Length: 240
Image (cartoon, rainbow, N blue to C red; front, side, top):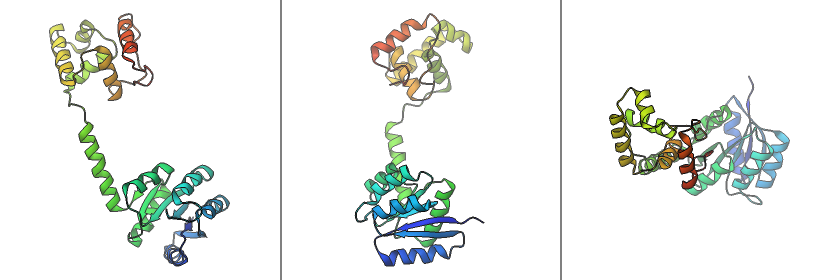
């Protein structure tokens, strides 16, 4: 069975020795090298081509964030797992943006470290449970704060057809509704969203995924819609 190859980087010799002992006794993991600073870990990663690079953030000569960024470019198949005493949001964000596949604090249990190495080797991200819980809470709060008004199924149908360039009579035919009903749904939709122009509805539909952002109607009735979109500053390819 192929073992997961790991390169350890930490500026403390005792920490590197402890990590090597733990990983070498795991059975399915093999430590192929060590590095004591950020510059060396990059060169060793290029030379050894490990599956996983275990890396601290606070490193001499080259910090772990910059080293992660360089490894992501020079050794794209290697997965970087940050193992550090820093657990603040900024450090986590910087590490993820730099290309780290996982983030653990040094307070993590040995079982979490082994699990993290195995998971990121498989291609799955891994974070210390407290950090993961905090990130999930932040994500949920952002979603609740920016969530769009809930639309009914019928309103969603009408929104998509309006955005695709259908006029009231055409929408009535597609949905088997009277034109009066379509007009009622259209007005309630506009009132709910606070958007009273077709161009703005189209922009909302594209940003919410109701229609593809590069999908524009191709029948004659769409000319006015296209002009409204251009006047409103909406990019027809990106939807913004």
